[in-house]
Image (cartoon, rainbow, N blue to C red):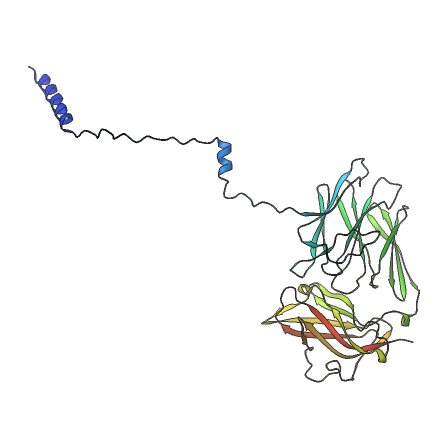
Length: 374
């Protein structure tokens, strides 16, 4: 027997002995089954596991008003909408009239204006709507010039923050490529402001600013509306009008007009304490250390003389005297000693108050009266 054959026999013998001595598995023991989970198709897998950088869903705006109208004269109507991401409270006052839609006033917790967006097709223009009791918005499709094929959008709103504010008009034009938005001049009469058209290419606004009525005429051209004339006509005597000092507050962008104080108190016998609500405090309250500061001006702009006895600023029921008042000063105490303001004069007042909170109720109080010029 060769050495190679002997070596092969020894290997086979060793393998047989190893198999004979190995333990045998239990009769009921089975190898675990391998379960293959189904793999979803690529598109389903992507849907089940979104990428971590997927954008958040965009909020859907509320539609305040919508219509289809051919604005650019191409024979195809464009979708026209007013939308907002703010909240509107339809229970607030609206001034219903021939040019107004009952949209309701805008209310939010910021104490500032609410944003409204005018959409014409894919074009947009945003503008501010004042919240509160005198918040108001109207929209109307108009045809300033019947000789062309185009139409315009007339919008009317009110500058908030004061009492009985005037109406402010704007005109939007769409030429198929751009959306133009044009603000028109406005007066400051109580609840004043009317706009009329007759299809001859002119738009006319009228503001009753007692004792005068101001009429402004605009002509429509390729570049929009151009002021053609402005006429002021005296219609009443000054003593027949509600007059009083005008209140301005220092806002982020300058002094903002808020209304009038001592309204209709046109004789010494009518002297009393009167208040003016100062809305939108987020625009004029300045944080200052642990408190806040408010700066305002009383301006005598009319032909009259004001006799001011005392002025305070009320914030959430707490009254604050102007800086510099420590029991003295003609406008500090209601003691019958008056600070006299003649036409063209201004009284600037600063108030330091407690820390301002969003939604604070702010009012200016004044004791006194005025006398119209003879």
